[in-house]
Image (cartoon, rainbow, N blue to C red; front, side, top):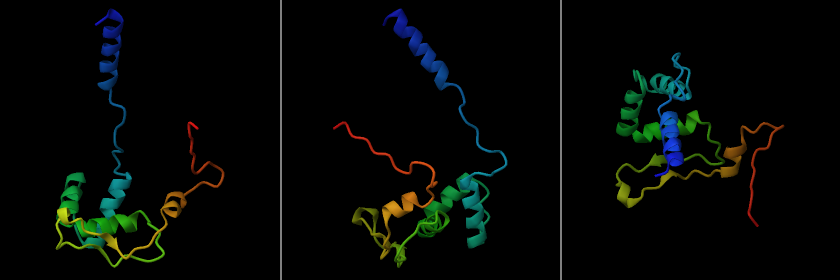
Length: 124
């Protein structure tokens, strides 16, 4: 390894050890807003991320139903059920059965009218 390469490796290691971001200590994150909404809707007392995570594992159909609602997913036809819990993952159960939605509509629904909403590039 050359001296030049060694210097760059040390520089990279120094960069990796710096904290780049701290969560909002006021619990004003989208995850905390979601957790508070789940508590309200389901009469729970999920105090932190770990509690929310455990609830998402134990009650995954309710979790994904709440994610759908919290994120404001737009559909022309609502889902009949989130997932058939009698099926195993290896059976590849159908998620949000019966729902009909437009992927692009959901991607662009918050678009700022004065900014580029979608950018595509090709090497050809």
